[in-house]
Length: 228
Ligand SMILES: Nc1ncnc2c1ncn2[C@@H]1O[C@H](COP(=O)(O)OP(=O)(O)O)[C@@H](O)[C@H]1O
Ligand SMILES: [Mg+2]
Image 1 (cartoon, rainbow, N blue to C red):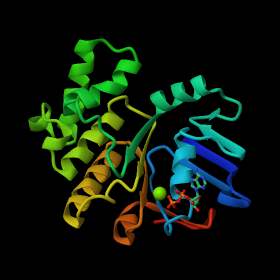
Image 2 (cartoon, helix red, strand yellow; image 1 turned 180 degrees about the vertical axis):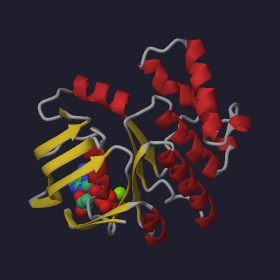
Image 3 (cartoon, rainbow, N blue to C red; image 1 turned 90 degrees about the vertical axis):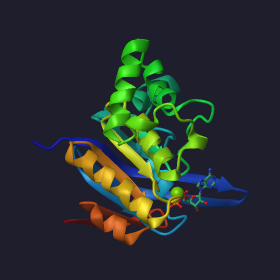
Image 4 (cartoon, rainbow, N blue to C red; image 1 turned 45 degrees about the vertical axis):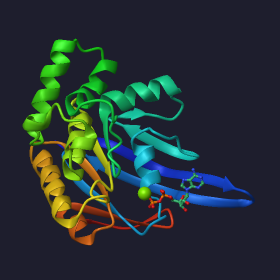
């Protein structure tokens, strides 16, 4: 039976910039089911990151409703949103956002610290997750000792280690060359085959078409949705 993990209803995000109202997201409704692999595509400035940040509870909408795993996030306070984020969402960014002074292993252990897991189990689970992304032989390397693709694998392991309900990747291949980007895409495909729900923002038509579903966005509005 399908289960809706993300539900957006008439979601708007407006910004005042001087005298000008920017409608970054302008009335978006969408459902994402468990196990789906969805690409969000659209030109620069169309609202892709705004939508991801709202889905991931990194930001709150101007109006409309966002449900994460059935919970309505409207009216939640910052503490409740942080709890939801930590438990349910794994975020992956274009620029990796790793902590430079920590090893790959320590970076991946970090989310478990906030989840109150013992150090022995943190280490075990982080090692296991680094193995799943193909980095078992790089666990003691720091980010500046890793290639771009390896850094992104560490970031993916960090997003995965808590077993989140949904993985949100905002242009995860944007800082990588084509061949490395393809390898990272293949890793997301593997993670989706293993049952993870993935939302993937990309500029790249070829990568977007490899996702099972595409959502096209322009000027903060959905254009059309395809399910292959
Ligand atoms: N904090 C902000 N303040 C003002 N305008 C913003 C802010 N964040 C995004 N925007 C504007 O909202 C629109 C959508 O931005 P964004 O979601 O980052 O687009 P994308 O990720 O598709 O490139 C853009 O016009 C951008 O300039
Ligand atoms: Mg963006």
